[in-house]
Image (cartoon, rainbow, N blue to C red; front, top):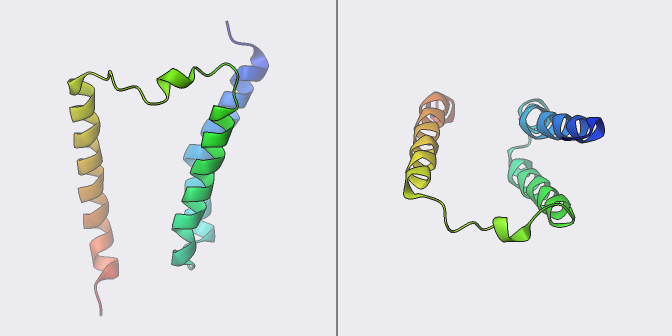
Length: 97
């Protein structure tokens, strides 16, 4: 069973990655388009460093090549769907006027 502090840490991590970072990019960096990619790269490197230094993390699971094909297809289709939707909703704003 996880400790209360572990659950709190996971909640903070979830909020930071899935709420804080997108909101920071949306509101804080929306006028500085060139900084979005470096911020995302920096955040991913920070997450990788935290994960790599976690003694409870089994590093053999990091690159799990034994993923069933159904999972790869599902993730690929979801990525494609999100890419198309984001392109369709962004398209009017990137057209020259």
